[in-house]
Length: 279
Ligand code: SF4
Image 1 (spheres, protein in one colour):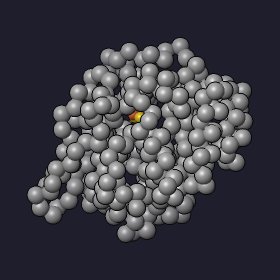
Image 2: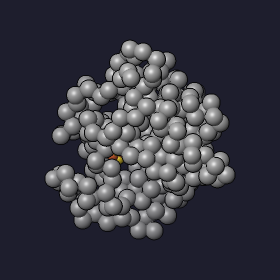
Image 3: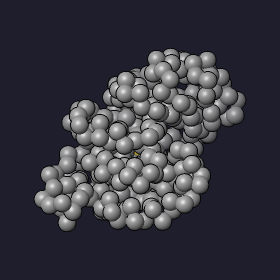
Image 4: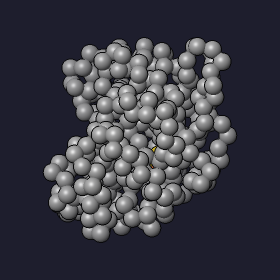
């Protein structure tokens, strides 16, 4: 079995170095047995990451360091377990009936799925060959524009693009990386006419202010009709225990989930720029 997607050593104890890291480089296959991906877990009947009932593949590894990350245990690029596309296809196709009946499909999430593009390209191609809807849930931290990226996107029906903060002065302390790559990727998707949902986590005192919502709305409007929906996700503390288990300090301790009034206010601002803003 060849390993063309083995994840190399990356320092994961501290913030990712956005200037030196990007996609985890793949290794050329030694034979034709296919790509190996490193996954954290799967969820067989997900209902919140794309339309319908979905088989969610949580890929291992992420280079952002979001303060509110509820999947803190996905960061380590050495963690998770190795799977091949045929193994995963055998598993997910047993749920095909539920996926098809509900208008669902497969979602690659994480961690960050775009760190393992060769695996996602093969997985999504296999899904499309079987008529299964594909959805890519990504933070958009993409710095290489090449054939591999286009191969992933050619086999992607829907992109869920997280924009953490439109204001880079707030984005950097919130995620430890600049938003410029995510915004560039959003423009690239728009230029391709790729259908996308923009997702925005509303975090009190970090992303719930009027200026941020206005700026995000203006940016989304520039992307045009390919943005089908804007999803607002209220911040929650449900992943905090994972930080505790790993002995990490959780910076947002004490910050409560946003109130309904806050969510309504952000929704109303974004609603000036897009007709379909939901939470
Ligand atoms: S991009 Fe997602 S997985 Fe990565 S740190 Fe942020 S919230 Fe966590």
